[in-house]
Amino acid sequence: MACPFSRREAPGLAAHPRAQRVGIFSMMTAWVFSVLIFLMILGLPIAVSMGLTAVIFFVVLGQADVLLMVPARMYSSSTGFTLLAIPFFILVGNLMNTGGMTHRIFLFCQRLVGSVQGGLGHVNVVKSMIFAGMSGSAVADAGGVGMVGMEAMTRAGFHRPFSAAVTAASATIGPIIPPSIPFVIFGGLTGTSVGRLFLGGFIPGFIMGLGIMITVYLISGRRQYPRQQKSTIREIIAAGLGAWSAYLAPIIIIGGILVGVFTPTEASIVATLYALVVTVMIYREIKTRDIFKILWLTVEQTVRVMFIISAAGLFGWLLIRQKVPEAVIQGLTAMSSDPFIILLIINVILLVLGCFMEAISVMLLTTPIFMPLILKVGIDPVHFGVVMTFNLMIALLTPPVGMVLYTVSSVGKVPLWELAGELKWYFVALVISLFLITYVPSLVTWVPNLVMGKET
Image 1 (cartoon, rainbow, N blue to C red):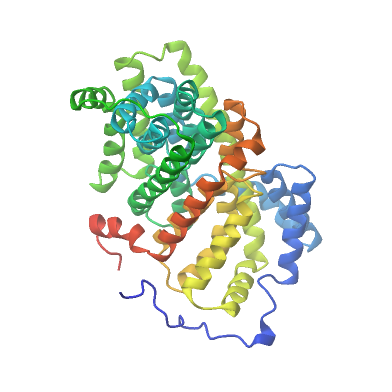
Image 2 (image 1 turned 180 degrees about the vertical axis):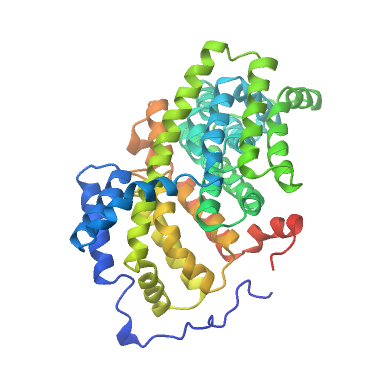
């Protein structure tokens, strides 16, 4: 079987002498990240820490005049056309959670896989895979349709921490199966086709789901958790027809992008209009008075994301001016020019950073640093974008900063560290899945190349 990467060294990446292998970061790089970490330890939000670090170093380096450009730089970082999709996908998730789709999805999944050992645990996973095609947000899944599954599992006799762990693990599928807010952000940062990223997430998303379901099956068998009575074909079909809106949403979004009817940003608007029509006019579970609350919640969530993006843009500007990406490239290529090794190192770095920083912040912080290296050693940007997003979704489950971990712990009323302990086997399954898609790139690139053709 042919190796998916070229084993020869990329042009211009001759091995460095051992004496020159002084590490990834220059002295200035070390100081920049030391200040950033210090501010985070003081308890400042990550966005404030990044922005303040940039301001401090511009002053210390005698570049105070640059501060006049800070507002413009932060504004430009958060106003790309692609990034306009973010508030609309957030709104879609909020509409779906409030408007009755979650219960219809859950009923269909219950009929479909409820009879397997660990029944409702598998239902929780499959409903996340379906809901992923609408919201693109792990936190939206965990706090919405995830809570429906968790409460049902608890009532059926499942141990509550187990129910919470399944809910949290399955929620990470949301940003992998399209649409995906992190894919939109990565595409906006790097110029990578968002359509290709969406398509590249299908197989990895199903691999994630399969890995979590195998874990649920093994744990359920050992603990003798219940399964439900097998449903008839007629019951499955009836429940499937009742959840028709769940399948139509991703078809509209992905189909419209692929045939060129609209861009990913325009697709987010179409998805919002679709969600409004279904939840307000067809299901009629959202009243006029509810719309303002949903819109306000969306504004709050969008402002938080956009502020992080704008602060990261300023911090990234500092890194570029101080040639940090070049220092990282020199340090990593001094270790190895083999794409296999470089991907391993990057995965480890991302997993560690994800334990201490919010996922989108890590993406915004590291993408400008890693992308020049990725392009230089010949790794497909679509492949790398999916691998990075997959990695950061695992980070959503890790203390002390995992947002999904906190969401499920808070909403589900399960102690944080008890939930983290219950998640250990799901973490193992997800890490195995991560390395599978990392070292078999065709699992990511096959669908985009099949549908959109190979990039030249």
